[in-house]
Image (cartoon, rainbow, N blue to C red; front, top):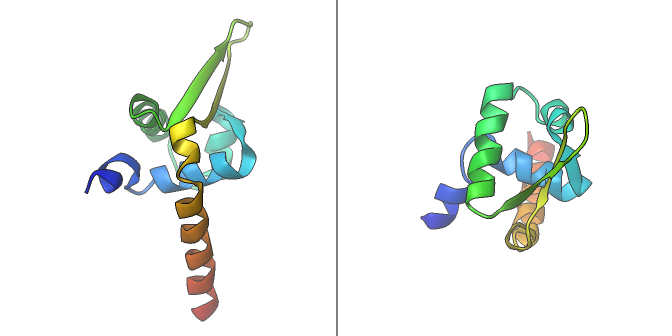
Amino acid sequence: MTSLAVIGGKWKPAILYFLQQHGVLRFGELRKVVPGITQKMLSQQLKELETDGIIVRRVYAEIPPRVEYRLSTLGESLRPMLDAMASWGMDYLRRG
């Protein structure tokens, strides 16, 4: 399935969820809110999501450099699905 190829895996759903919740996050902020992800893996996942048009990476011409990530218009279209997944996850945890 194309959708799973683009947004599936261990890390992408979590990254997308936190970007949806916070709007705009910097790399370090994402690293803090996505539990257990390494710097290398976060960088790789962000590059893939950007290449696929799901997120937007904005680089500010500052010293030190500042880079922010947010959902693209295409990524915003995932909101209903991300909300449904989060709701399902909470229901699942309550059953446990």
